[in-house]
Figure: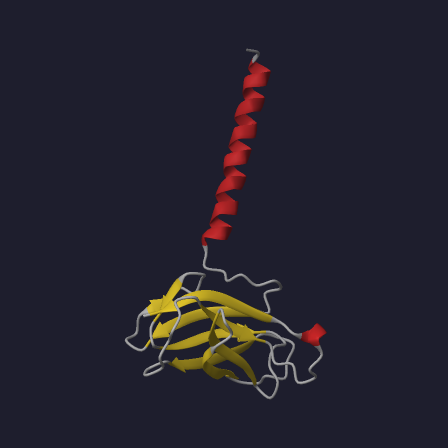
Length: 152
């Protein structure tokens, strides 16, 4: 083969490997599936101190706390978080609460607590749902993010 063709092939392969590495690095981090990055869940902590990576298929304990940040999701410093099954049965409802000034266009830190102790959970197909506060009731302003989870 011609040396120019071999050099070109080596350069193309090196560039592909270089780009592939950075694409892989970007997707290997724990980034929840969110359409516009208006909600970022930073940490789920079990009552015994274990940290849980929130993603589809995550196994949550009966008692845990959630920490993260949101942008333009709060009304009066809160937004709803709940655990439901595929039939719509709500097992737990709580409010994520602002940790500081919530009337801003920047991200606002929030915390939420869930305690399912004593709650009879009848399904293994559960969803942890984060829903934007929408006091207007306008469906065009509705937004939510959910993760398929189980509780053990």
